[in-house]
Image (cartoon, rainbow, N blue to C red; front, side, top):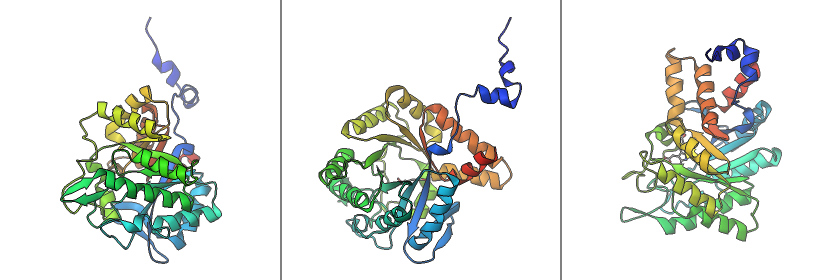
Length: 322
Ligand code: PBG
């Protein structure tokens, strides 16, 4: 006698009956890039099939997203104005703040997540305040918490700090609570690696540091124990959801976290991962739909609850076809 695994693979109904993990639209988050100007809907050259959008074109985009059944978006702002203090990031009339208000006017149920960082808004492109070539931690916290508060005021449901300064979750939580935003959640980019997979995003957001790199605040790709420490710290500081980023090369981290934390875990399927698939598919080397569904179900199988992906709309369409 031996185990006949093939018995449960005989046809598609049987396979479906015993399937352990399902990819579902309900867990997807779609990233949106907001720009100044009017009537802008321009394809991003480094991120095929993704667009720069001006606020006045946001309604039609959100209508499409909600019709597809995608429950959440994450907003990135590309301001026209950058300075040493990143002041356009915490301007109550800034690009993301206006975007959030615009969405909430008509689509109050859509979950609006706002990426909180300084790099897109600050002249030197680092995620915190720079002095004598060093990124200062505690000085940056004040600004980052200010950004979070202004997003909360605009109506964001979830604040997602991506700067990797130590202590930012507690700084944000405190300021939000003091101002009556105790029901605004925090999804922390807890485990964010200093990764080359962000290449296309940095071209989009013009947010590469002008000098040095991000290795003094983003994590070393070689580390796994450190990921546990970062995640546990963020949860203690008050994070509601923790994130692992990138996702593909870090599924062991997602899996390991799943064994030890009981908060929801988000996986960020980043720009480089997206473009590798897009490029190979456009050359006819792989089947885009099959590869994407296989990749994303892998994140779920590893233990991710939420998946942030530029493929969200495609997945919505593909899942409907099934
Ligand atoms: C900003 C930020 C980055 C990404 C999300 N927020 C870039 C970075 O840290 O350099 C990357 C997203 C992607 O690559 O898709 N701090």
